[in-house]
Length: 432
Image 1 (tube, rainbow, N blue to C red):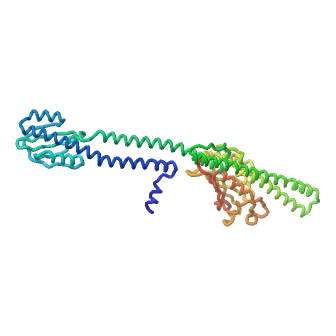
Image 2: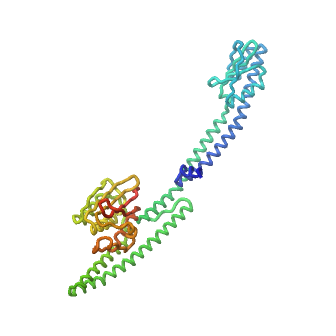
């Protein structure tokens, strides 16, 4: 369990990273195993052959020197690329055979030399002292003579092919992941009600099929929404005709308490029909554009609601966001309309965090009980009795606001206000 959690935290989170890991890891393992086999089998064999050769050459030079053929011994040592020094007799010294090359070379020397010797290392040389009765022969051999060029070629080939295949896999996976990213972006834009051209399928066959399925789904949903909107819009428009006739009849009738009550009911019905039209029509045809949010908030508040509603602004003028301007104005108008209906003062804040943009409205009205804060987002739910009596609404204001916020990819929550009323908190993702 601990290992699973450890791996989950450290493995790549993206499909791109995980796919590259799946491709690269076998290459690394294969190269590692190949290198291990090479250096433990082939390289040992090469070192053993070289060590035997050098041990025989040293033995040959020692034998010539013992036969009093010093000049011939020196010439042969030069031919064998052995640096020979003839020293006075010395006391025997121990060998230092740490390392696989010196260990193999030491075994080879034991098999070819009858005289006492010592094997040590001095910089880039292996030094062999052969202790004789009258002299000590010092042989110096370059360490690189024991290495085989095939080992360097093998390492370079392994690294080169690994890097090459990794680059090929990276380019290939980037091209395969691109259509998936485009599909995800199209789905996100479609979820935010933004208009865009149909997705052009690309990539592997499965990804193409997913793109085609998405285009078909988008077309069906748009057609269904258009049919529903046209039907409901037609019904709402048809309701206006009898409402207008009823209003005319009431205007011609003598005024009394019952007539005034009927006129009030007709006004409420007219408001409900207007809001219902706004709710079903939406803003799907409006294109998104980058908008400075603070000026729009001030414009809507000052043009339609001030001075009847006291607005206290705390806005960051640097915030720019990609959205549909008219939809955003409708959102602001609905929220400020509620504030105007139930409160006298509203505190408006607009700030930008690392993760999101936060727009808050805090009023000094009666607020909404916590147990009903989810219900007010349901269409036609009205809470007039628990707020200010006599100030009716259609029950579609906050549902319209929630739908508009969701179309922007954000969330809306209700809370208690710091000035005694209702607090509305809108969070928009900070990725536009």
